[in-house]
Amino acid sequence: MCRQKDRSVHPCFEKKSACSVGRVHLPVAPTCNIQCNYCDRKHDCINESRPGVTSAVLSPTQASAYLDMVLEREPRIRVVGIAGPGDPLAEPSRTLETIRLVAQAHPELLFCLSTNGLGLPDVVDDLADLGVTHATVTVNAVDPKVGSQIYRWVRFAKRVYRGEEGARLLFSRQEEGIRRLKERGMTVKVNTIVIPTVNENHVLEVSRWAAGLGVDIQNLLPLCPAAQTPFAALGEPEEHLVEALRNEASALLPQMRHCQRCRADAVGLLHADQSRDLAPVLRQVAHGPAVSRPYVAVASREGLLVNQHLGEAAAFQIWQPGQSPRLVATRPAPEPGGGDGRWRQMAQVLGDCSAVLVRAAGARPKEVLSQQGITVYEVEGLVRDVLAAYAEGQDMGAFRPCSGTGCRGALGGGGVGCGA
Image 1: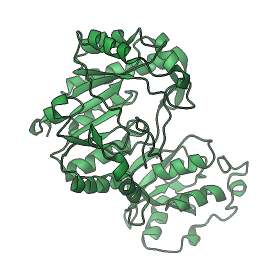
Image 2 (image 1 turned 90 degrees about the vertical axis):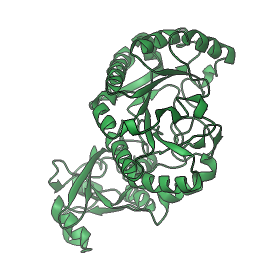
Image 3 (image 1 turned 60 degrees about the horizontal axis):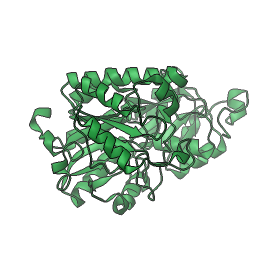
């Protein structure tokens, strides 16, 4: 598949294409597996033009439908990217499913993604097999001492790492991921944020390291200070500093000088972005009544029974309901805490689901999810039996737990996640 595509048309990797070739970012990645001191993700924003923000988050099926609408309006789109608003590989199943659907419908398009690299080594072969040709990895430090000043935490394999330990882990995964990308023949760009007083004297070390791995191009981006982040007060580096660093780094590997610091829902030409104009379309697809929701989410400890409280579930099984239900994915639940924000984030994670089956749930989570088009059913029993009944339109009351449908009755405790 890759050989049939003209890689030279990617506007982010080839400046000559920037004025004639469009790209669209599909915002299907709501969560992140690291926390940078400069990042503030926003899932409902049209006022800021920077990475990490989008007007809405889409499910894979919604993203495919949205892409069809975009292509009707902007025929110059040749590249489909996934760049947030979180990290595409924090929930790799969402990203891989999106690419699979898009590749089936539009095999002529180029596919790329932008990631921090933590989850990259585990999916390189999947990405290559699906036809992804371009990847961008954000690498801000190759020295853990510098990295420890940039990353607040790194979450990997259900454990949180901080300080130099977290930075060292992240860098090792970035290095392994990029090496494997090049082995699979992909075009790789390294993004490096130039952060005043933090890594401005370390940037060229990143360039030297990237060149040694065979990276194709580097993009030095000036810090874009986001309000209420630890680096908000640092300010944006002087333009002459960034240009001087680019000039020095260009002796090591090619430099991108036309980056627009695109949003996670960017669409159109790099210098004529249409994300604001298409925001109503994006939101209609994400929240409109016509949205296709073919799946049902299930909270289960072992995968056989519906037996978990909504708030205690660390992950959800995603099923295609019917007489022969089919498990299609497993998605991690948002981290506990955060009030209504957690339930809105959960609604985004389950955006292609019409319902979620749980042992019990609090009133407020059910209300928030219902507002987003997801019905919470408090049931118990074999997953396949409940799903078959749901597909037939049977009364779900027949599966209602025998005792205690509320938070305390179901768990015998304080109601995990019900009020936070």
